[in-house]
Length: 88
Image (cartoon, rainbow, N blue to C red; front, side, top):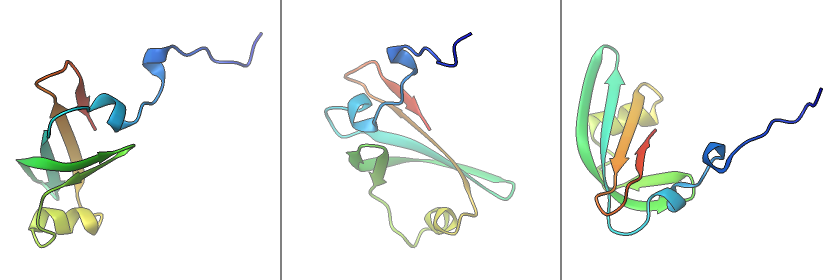
């Protein structure tokens, strides 16, 4: 019996910069604070390795909730020019 796990190229963790190439992307950011769910489109300012940066004000309620670890966050990005679909 072998202790190794075989993985395929599809199984490996890839950086966002590999998945999201090209033009500016717009993400749909959903937050849940308490029992309130809200969603909004947000422009991606930068895609770097495993991190996304967005063009938003730090004083918005939903950003403050994320910074305080008081929100559950889901991010979805679909690139028009390519087939990748990323959901975080």
